[in-house]
Image (cartoon, rainbow, N blue to C red; front, side, top):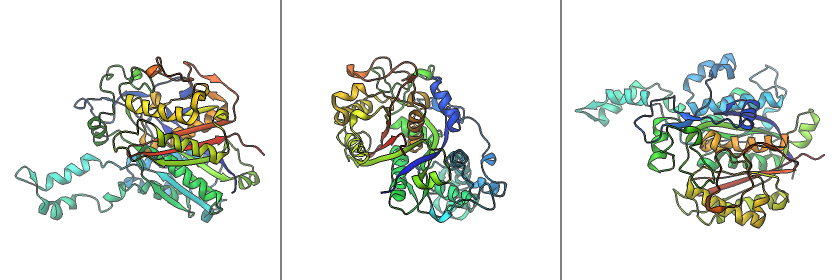
Length: 433
């Protein structure tokens, strides 16, 4: 198996646009969960979310491609912004930046995790209004007149594979490509697939991760109906998301994207690339316990972590930092802790945790931000504070700190789970020659 390293990181998160901005804000302990500005949330039980800073999508695509941004839903834009950051960070001259790309497009893959993209309600309701008959939607009028109100390319804004589609077109990538839609686990599964593709020799590079936005009325309503979001902290959003805390009362919706450039080690060395870390382990599992809750025993979640560590030939005791999923939903956090205890045993209390959802909210398929954060933690040898974790739930003994801390370690892990039971874990190690 060929070695795979990370040579570029692209992030757009509620804490900032760009890996550096995200990292600096994370270390500063900033919390980006606040009252929603994208729409009026007052009619919903929860009014808060982690929204990314304002941006102009035209600034992140070539001038020749700006017309295509008209058919980009928010999720697609997030992926395109993160991809631009990753390519620039890696120092790769793709089709987006030059007429003579210095990359072999046939050997450059793309795997991006995505969610079920919510349509823009103003577009849809305007078309439905045309198809009304007696105060109700008339399907015959919809087929004849309502659908005519939508642009012919309307559907192309909302297909999950459009994230990878636009990224590959913009950057001229023709290697192995795939889209994974497994909710919060999507990004890690996408990174894992790209990892295996390069290991097997089917590609030399790949851009991978995930992006999603749930900051829209439909996204918020779904999470409210599932009783996953905090409805008690509308007036105090900074302290709303409390991963693994005894006072956890639910998560907050969010948006963002994190994409990594994976590269075969010798290929990266040959072009003198900056190497952040080496990806050495990946595993996934499925518990099939429930479509709304993780298995309370944490059995399958633990299996993903244990198998990823075995894949990396790393013992649990060697892990210097873990970025857990940590949503701040009490029953989910308890299940995750149960899984972590199975994976790390009594040694769990010695593993520093960096639960970042308290600062950004739940990014769903955008959990590529978690993986990117794990790489940055390992690269900088600094562990962010566990914001809002004051009293560990159930008296759990977890290794967290109220302020950032420096540490010397060689292995970082990022693990996630999703509704439906998908689990995935990634193991990163400092790159050795």
